[in-house]
Image 1: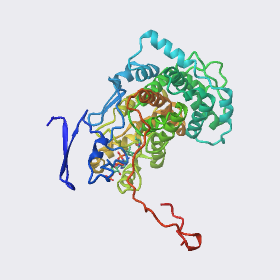
Image 2: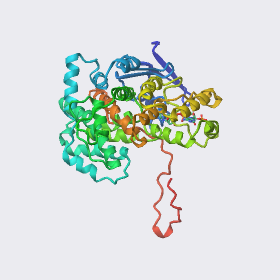
Image 3: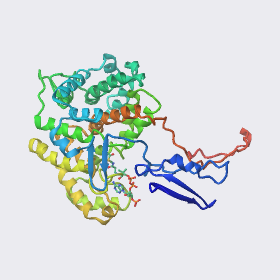
Image 4: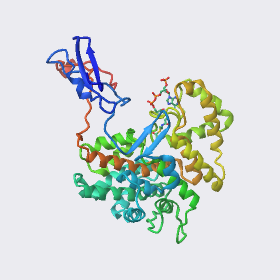
Length: 436
Ligand code: ACO
């Protein structure tokens, strides 16, 4: 018997099956041969939240959740955050290698020259209500770009995919800034090609009447680091959405809009905004123990805590804490930091959190820095979506060249009624209109 196999005995039939193990995994289709009769559909695997299902092979991002390791294309996140710019890391994620000086120059030029939006897109964003959430505006506006760039439907053409990739990376900060300016009622600011990616974003957010916007270099660098940390995170909820929508060959604007929609949820990228709301609700350090008790009693969750993959620490949270020190030297301390530190201290000593292996994740501290830099909490998830667009696109490009690519289409275990006789209207009983 080859050693790299798994032998399963079906106790219903006493038959044994030997399945190959490849890269530590078994192909779920190999289970379909396990049947009780020829009519039997065969055994399926049930994994509603993808707790133990690999949906693809990928060479982009490596995570070891037990050891707190995160690598992009093999490079530790700590080193990339220390030495690179965000666009340099974007190049690495998309093309697999760090760029040479010349390659980086040309890449930055390309992205910088795709930051403008068509005027119809600007007019489109004017249609939102004054109090629309910036994340809702971002998702809808990215989807609307599908109408501006009909050529994006040509997803099988590598050159076309690259063009849309550059457009999306370039335009995401412009859309994000417009959402913010719309929300606060300020006129939109057009991109400034002299500035770096993050400086230009800050320019489009905060420029008022000054002829030229000058970002604080420490704050711009902190934002660049935060963008690097958020650029990719393998098969998370939004990336899985990107791949799932992309697998139907939808254009990348629609797939990115879908991925951003998935990101907006409070259990995913929306958590950073929720952390700030939670810290506001707690109010003072003295209220922390009572809040922790509320969490333990099951009344609420500690937002910014816990992760599906990281079970010891989130390496991104460590880097963010360090970046926070630099930011606070410029901005002064954010009073919320004391509450957050107290919350972390108490939670990390508490049996409830220790037993469940709950640690601060990337969102726990990112919001505190964002607020100190001057971002409104409603913009926090948008700040996550800008850099994650690079990860979504890198994963989409990988999917599009995957020889095993097929439309994503899970199976179900049907548990409802079958083959019922039709009931005429006059014989129907009130069902109570409860959605089942
Ligand atoms: N506060 C309190 N209890 C928690 C928390 C939390 N933040 N997270 C998990 N738990 C508890 C669960 O209630 C469960 O307890 P039980 O075993 O008694 O039922 C146990 O820990 C396991 O949690 P699951 O929900 O099964 O873990 P899962 O891997 O499905 O969820 C998730 C991970 C969604 C991140 C979860 O920890 C959570 O909701 N955290 C708060 C939201 C958050 O910060 N999200 C951002 C994640 S990072 C990102 O997307 C960028």
